Every structure is written in structure tokens, then in C-alpha cells.
Amino acid sequence: MKICGIELKSNIASLVVINDGEYIDLKIKKIILENDENQDDIRKFCNEFLLFLEQNFIDKVVIKKRAKKGNFAGGPVTFKMEGLIQLNPLCEVELISAQTISSFEKKNTIEKPSELKKYQEQAFLAALAS
Image 1 (cartoon, rainbow, N blue to C red):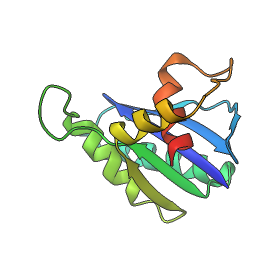
Image 2: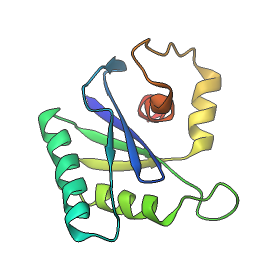
Image 3: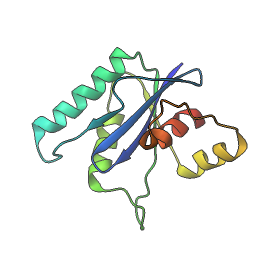
Image 4: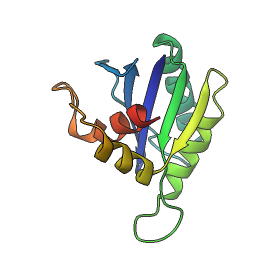
């Protein structure tokens, strides 16, 4: 099963794809929503994401949850991006909490692939923990 792990920060969706627990090094590692107030940019983000899912035959998407309030709360753009991702008609989308990821990381020995970029680590862990 191909799983796409996603971490949303600012206006960037960091992407990681694993297949049966093995990291797949893809050319596209993130998709950016340039201007969340511009309809063309929102459509571009949606289309790029759907194309990514289609081209890589993704079976499931896992998004690391962001806090809704407090110091580490997600910004409004990340909530918009999350909604757009959840509306994709191609595969199921699951949200996974930071606590679940942390617990998974403590219980398992995880070798991070050398090709994995630093900004992709949380997306990678989200995909593995699902």
C-alpha cells in the first residue's frame, strides 16, 4: 500500500511516500500554496496535489494534525490546505496526532533514509505511524 505522509506548515505541504514501510525518493517533495486568497493559486495547489496522487498511485494520505489553539496552533492557510487535501476524490485521508507519532517513534526503531530531507521527517513519521 502506498501511503503519502504530509506535514502542513505555513503555506507548504511537505510530502513523503512510503510503500509497505519503505521510503520512495520522489522528485516532488513539497507543494506550495502561493496565495491562499487567489482562486487560481488555490486551483493550482489542488491540481498539483491531485496530479501527484495520480502519478504516484497513492492509496492513502496521512496528515499530521495541527493544534487548533494555543502556542503551536496551525495558521489559517494550513487549515485551508488540509480541507483541500481532504476533498480529494482519489483516496482516503486520515489525520494523525503528534502524540500518536511520538508514541510510535518511542516504541519502534526507525531508520531515516539518507535521501530524506530534514523538513520531511514529520511527514515520514506520520506515514509510518498510520
